[in-house]
Length: 335
Image (tube, rainbow, N blue to C red; front, side, top):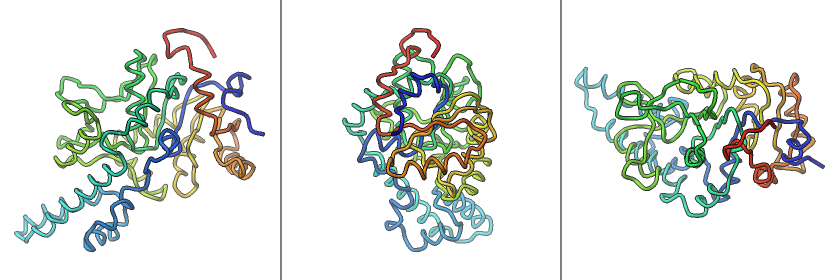
């Protein structure tokens, strides 16, 4: 038998301070969610030469490939070499990225998803931090939901006298802080080398604004590398991603991990950050209950110096609805 998340809270074994979510969170909200790699989604639509570029650069990251093509076009122009074929490849790969994003996120986000966002209180029960390794737009929707409930949530993007929202690493002790550890489809590095956040503006849905932004050559900032070493290298090369990663390393207290496999080859950098933090208690959600012994043994081996509890991921949403943290409704009480 494995405890429910609600039981861990009721027995005061766990405090709802920090949350780390992975792919399972998005899939749990929408079972038809297509969370395959954008590259895998579009690989067969690319030209052989396009695929060769990804292979030569040893990456599945569209942003990295497009940056290299841009650089090659610039160098060729200096030497007055022909750049037409490179330009065509750039537009083809950019279009594949846009199509991949649209495939992952249906244009209207589906009413089913909207309804599940409206009835999801996961972010509401946490008091300090939300960390996500997903680059989808679901955390944005939950962010907006909390904002509409007059809960202060800080994603570190402000205007700062500019006409667009830009990354501002200013923390507020009274707010719930939201970190996109692997970037997001609505974030990009603009021509002034400033990390900018896409806004809906005249669009009804954010995904339409993201698509328009990409058509204007604003390639989303997201980490799509397979191996953790490559992911960490990309994280360290960007000031926003580095800020989010360092923030994970600097948390303390109690951390809940939900919908995250913590695969050793893909996610060791996340494990290392948690081990390097002052987190004392970890609550880890297990979805495959038939393998709970093997999973719990693996997770304990990752965090030998932390106190660890396990809970049933399948009943997490129900537990959250029962907990309904009072801070989300303007009340004040210690849990």
